Length: 107
Image (cartoon, rainbow, N blue to C red):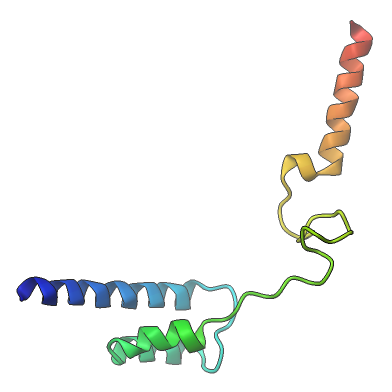
């Protein structure tokens, strides 16, 4: 019986820590209430606070714009402001192509 209580306590502790970390470390503002209110709810309402955070308060990630997915015809990166992989960067590819042509000319 004690093992069950220890397991339930650890599960509750994991839920509280995960909810607090997600609430305080998120980039987007939470829905419905401010971060301070959500922290208070998570800490003061034992199990339901964490469940409420993940079901109601957590900000949803922004939806991708139409035409920017993999099946889109734009051909560009999904998030032009974010970092690009080297093989998606046109300047990098141009530089490699130039280097290869220069190496072939020297041979």
